[in-house]
Image (cartoon, rainbow, N blue to C red; front, side, top):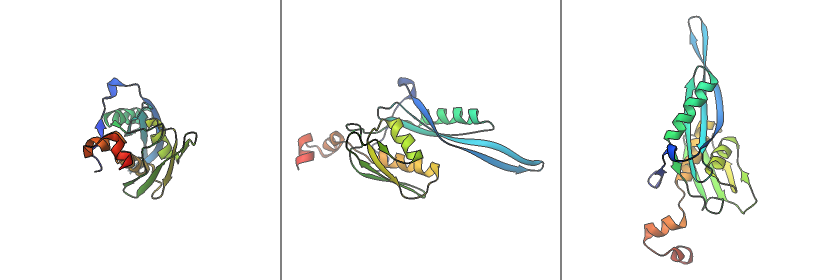
Length: 172
């Protein structure tokens, strides 16, 4: 059930805001010494349920960020946002990263760590309780957060999938 209900979105149709999650300087050891380059993880979103992430690598920081933004625009997905929070509790896993997302009451805010916060705010989620339980590596945390969001289904989708009325989903 992980990737089947994700809807792809075209970047040209919407206004996206980008957030840089992490920038790392990486070194390659060559004959004359060390050669440095940069990798940047970038999250883009419209604040209304559309979000994507990308990785850019280049010899300069600005070029790495630009490449990351371009990559993120190619990987946009639509996630369900219900009254400013997530529809239900979800767990996401990727590699050593494990994240837990829970719905929160209005006014709670985004209670999440750095990499998760960037993804959730870019998606337009205003109130959520989140916990990163596994690896703190930003790559794994971002991908695990996307996995958790991919497993989210709103009530309307569940009703359509089951072939029942929306009220029957809640009332049994």
